[in-house]
Length: 117
Length: 381
Image (tube, rainbow over all chains, first blue to last red):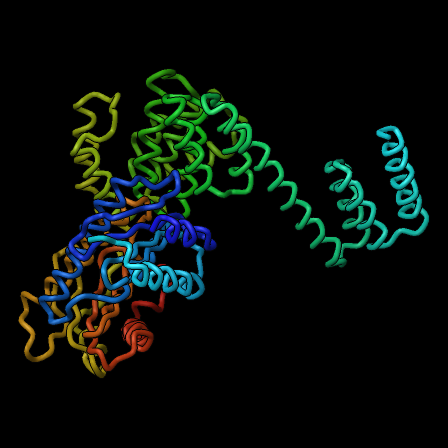
């Protein structure tokens, strides 16, 4: 699984990626020096859990893609069926292009069934 | 053999120099510059290109060659310094040199990355702390990233703990305080600095701006972040407890002169309610969440729970050093959620699944423009 994340991190502007289960448990991460693993784990877990809980209350269920643009970066949470793929990028990245790599990584994660969770 | 190589290089350079001199053109200048560069004489290459660009300012070829060679030289220097860091992982100067080269091209993310790594090997190193703070200050001014401001304060305080009179740290801390909107503390730091460094025009302009009053970086979120940070005591504070307390008070009581209002929520409600497929809209502002649109079958408390996504996103962005969430799109089998951030709150809209996500975004933007929220450039957070 780490090789998939490492491949994804080679895409332009990607600062790090991680795999988090639907109930918010960090499975794997490949992060650059500026990103703290504990912070990513806590953040991803909290964001996934809170978002799913809020969406369920309005009958939405689980989400397939969550893209967020913030003042200093962008974040993508993509559903890889067995878990969510979390990707953090630089602010100037064109997500439309990076999304192809993210989709490919999600597909590979899901297909390989390497999660063991 | 080596001597032969040197002679060949010199002959080649002499021939190209003569050609560029006798028959100057963008091509001959470019050839000479490229040869200099390939032989390892980068400075001569750039000097030749500068001369060429001065002679032929319209030559796109020379400009693009200059950009390409600058980039190549930058990458070469980065590789050299990265090797140096690998060979001497406990040498702060290696990290400093690498971080400085990134700082020169304003790649502040890389600067912070290198400085962070350097500080793990050389904790408390003054040069790294200062450069890290300068990079964070740039990001803070550019992106209004409260996390960067707070980290810059922490790093500068660390420098001042070791050397309370460090002029650079005092000046930078004054600037961060200005961005955080704490003018009194900024003046206290900048005034003595300017007095002893009257030639520093940049610091003088900062002081003038501080004395003039509220600055461009003022925002509710920034102030809240600082207030929270001071309240939880995350700053390694060297100020007395009394001043720390007054700082919290001054931040929380000062009127939010830069607060942006979304305008009439009624008009927004009207504009959005016409959108096909819209299920719910919530405005999460300083006065708390407010349901603007609610489709039949949805309960108000459930619609209000959509604002939990906003608070989870804000927390995530702070934890990840991403600044402030400005825009988000959530898609799923059951619909689309669009979140738009403003200086004083967030708007969350829920659309049914028959509405494509791009159309949902466009519909929200149209509605915001319709009620004048997006008319002013400064209105978007």
